[in-house]
Image 1 (cartoon, rainbow, N blue to C red):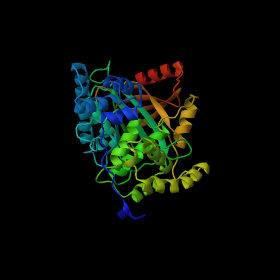
Image 2 (tube, rainbow, N blue to C red):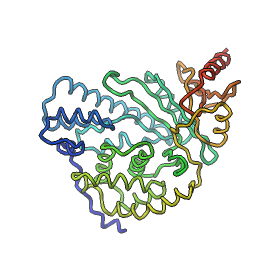
Image 3 (cartoon, helix red, strand yellow):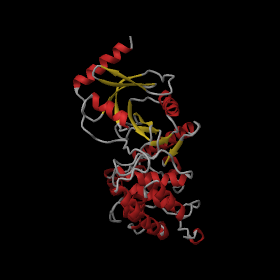
Image 4 (cartoon, one colour):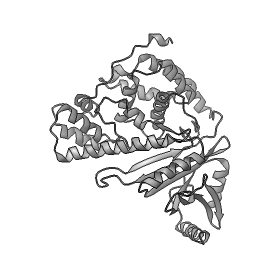
Length: 380
């Protein structure tokens, strides 16, 4: 494939007409119907609809304008956090602000959360402590897993939105790996591609392991593929092959091509290159080829089976989750989490608090109470 033959599509123009088509709404309906439907689908679309409606001159009252202003402040909050955390050596933000910057001026890309990848656990706690110290964190989720003989951590910090009755909470997810993969078919991949646009496209494709693609994913893809700095399609395909995501990126390309207004944004040479790669990747998955790393998913659902199972999973590199028992008032000075055995299970002591490690969503109340007792005794 000759990169010189690439024909750059025209930039995507995000209009109300396009949003009507994406959401399957007849054009004669008023924008209020478009907004109502946007609230009913996945992808945090209302801010996008409101911003496009404002640009189109649609009638907007104080309520809709206030919501749009809140969402712009939300986006600015995430951008500020991204700027702060990328000062940490090796830290990298995926999707989020870098995708938003590619959207047409004035169009607000919805931001549900912020995804940050750091090179090691010390920097994870450094990044987490910065977020924790400056925001009213009221929820912490943690997953510990292993790959290639190394312990990895995924951490989510949550706090209330400006208007908790109307808007979703804010969340920053920090991890020591880039792409979690899926069960036993695609392994955890620690690194990211060197180019941000590759890293973002693969992060979009990776979402397919967690959920079906959404309208937001298709818009993201179309905006990226029509960017002036898009790398050659051959390079994108090679990145998808290296990171085991050719089938998922192809599915997203084909879904986007199925939208009449977005079809020109997807180069045929990209879909053709990905189709050529898919059979080999599917065969690797059928053969259980681990790609040289332990597989691991950041949010598996398995039944709880006691402390012994947790220790065994930790030893084998499989994921276990942390149930918060005690949150610190201020970030501690530590640079790593430490496991500690007690009579009934395993604790994880971190700079942000103490967690009970469990292997599922359902936790025995007696185990929980025993863990709380162990934490209180340890604090004396």
